[in-house]
Length: 197
Image 1 (tube, rainbow, N blue to C red):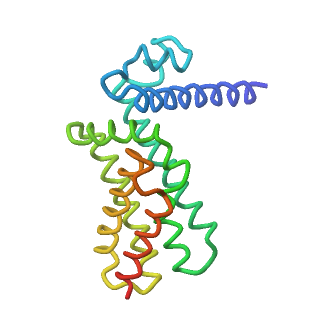
Image 2: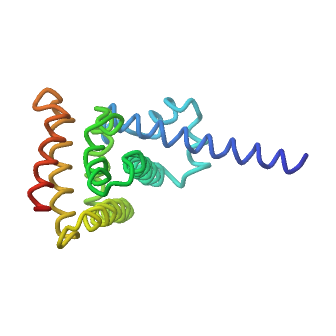
């Protein structure tokens, strides 16, 4: 009975923490960094401001946890895209790169959260560390996929392709009608074909 009660309590604590993280991400996406505060986050999560301080040292820690959770979510999406592409190295590489142009990565709400994270990464050491680890992980996985396709200098190519994908994703997020997801994927495919030649 005691073990069941502890499991339930722990699950509830995890659920509350996750709800606060989800609410913080939604606030950042909707109103940006300037409009994201303890009151707004707690109102969206349906909890009292005191509960936020129970699970996080403050809003800065919650925002950092939100960035980490968002990065982890993106990693899982990219990993699933690769896993669903089969065994062919080129198909796996393509799936990894073009996942950025498919839902849920193209969710317009995500842009607001990412821009807040990027802005904070320039001035907050904790956010900078999350950013550095996230991008290093993305590039390392991309370099592995490039190496499996026979690329020379896969680490350098991974930096180039990451910049290309990020730029296209940003443009699509700002104006979906500019060139479209399929055109973005085709541009990346063209670049990869040239780089692997």
